[in-house]
Length: 350
Image 1 (cartoon, rainbow, N blue to C red):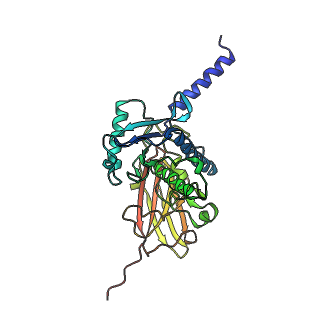
Image 2 (image 1 turned 180 degrees about the horizontal axis):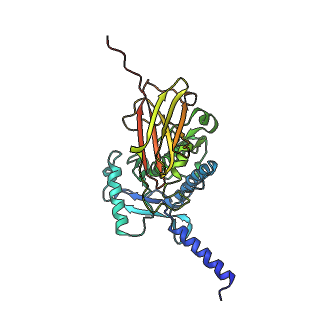
Image 3 (image 1 turned 90 degrees about the horizontal axis):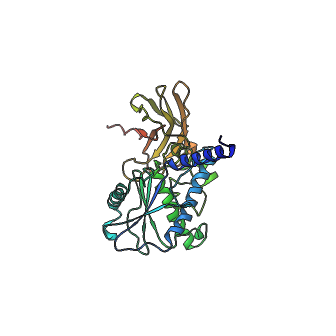
């Protein structure tokens, strides 16, 4: 007959096994064939990534969310983040800022294909050593993101009010920001109230402030992370979510107080959240949405929604152009986007 202690031990081991099976983000150190790894990179990056994880987890807890960031850990040393080393086929000039990410991603995917079972989740951070001259990709690319490593990227500089501290914040914040894109986060800006109370939104210009001045995750970013593979506290749905963008009714009305977003989504549905954005200036082009304030839209039991994005919370744009957007976030982590132009009406021709 099994004792209580034996049953308890078995349950604990089963729990650990289940936790180990949960998707966790991958970290890859990619070394072009004419470079070497930066000094003490594994220990340094372990501390840097833990600090980034602490930021994400703390912000999600502040929002009342149970979601937490999972990073792959070393099976032999669970306290250490697992960093896969991939040696590039080309010199560093073969992985330029423009186009270098796609080339590196292809080689990283080949590495994982040759080593089945190592890749835990789609979300992957790729770091390249860079001492002195800057080079290489530094952006999000689907579920991949790219950043750089150098010997002074060290948590001993976290919060330091000197040039090394400023440089650390730039690249620490940049890493966390680009990883955010791999997690499915679009750019967004702090509302006036949040900016006054909490500082800079990570997915706005927080890529320059994290580790140097107050930086935070917006409520919209938190809602998206809740259904990301490497954050979610609940199991991912076994079947893909049914997308309902074509069935969604939405109107956008510009009023003296703000932009009113009204409509209805079909019920039942597989929505996790509905998010509205006020995106100033022209939308087309890369990185033109850093200034987009975001608002989580409450949905009534019958699928109706009615939200005012108040101008009192929106920063002025540089031009009269603006767009309203609705982003549908589904329980399986997928997203759909509905965009509506709010540009002023053209002058009447004489």
